[in-house]
Amino acid sequence: MLHAEALVDDVVTDVLAAASGDSQAWDRLVERFSSLVWAVARSHRLNDADAADVSQTTWLRLAEHLHRLRQPERVAGWLATTARNEALRTARRAARMVPVDDDFDLLVDQEVHDVDRRILDYERDAALWIAFRALAPPCQRLLRTLMADPAPSYAEVSAALGMPVGSIGPRRARCLERLRSITEGTAASLESEPRMTV
Image (tube, rainbow, N blue to C red; front, side, top):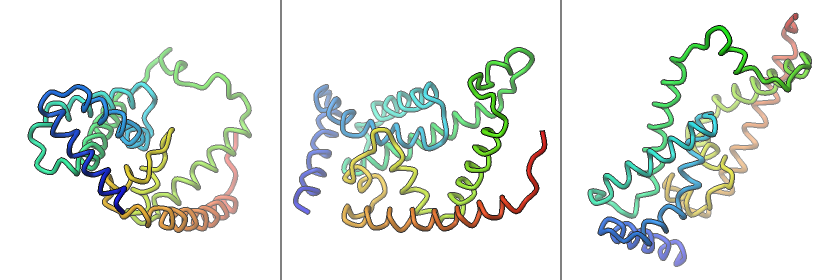
């Protein structure tokens, strides 16, 4: 508990110092929360380039608003919300782009030639995403936040989601068990449907 309180105090100190122009404090904030921002960006299924743009824009927004943060101890939540908004904006913009002619060939994965493999991958992904969307929103938020490379620390997850550090592991286990259970049911229903013909 004391460690968590010390972490919050360090974050508040760094936010206030960075707002006053301390570049070392800014660097500590970036080091502490960059994996969280990246995790939120990637959780919206953006490619690496778009996720990097979202991350960069999120940090730019923080730099612009740092001196106006009323609750510096909640900077992790502010970053997560801003990254989520930027990711959604980027995803909407990408959805409006329609490939034409030769551009379409660039989007096809040239390494995938096995039709059966693609069908199996599609069925697995479909079952997983259907199951994921069936989870309660708190489970979705927790699992999306934890899906990062590298994963954010539990302290970062706690700050971003407002959860006690001690409850993250057990809740994660319950969410994954629920996801597994839903996925098995979804996969079974997909197997009972007629196969795609090619």
